[in-house]
Image (cartoon, rainbow, N blue to C red):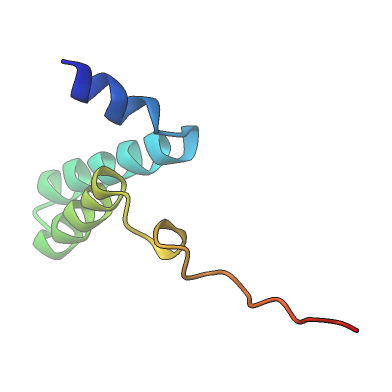
Length: 68
């Protein structure tokens, strides 16, 4: 149970919102039988669960210039 508590302590509001949006996209895709939309919803749900994205690995940093 401690692992779950530590895992959820690292979450931000935006990460929760992305998870909720992904779940809503899955539900809407399944209700309308649009399987591509449901697949995209699965993708958008996995992203916050695994903390994937542009800034997860620090890849969005702009290298700083040494100004002299």
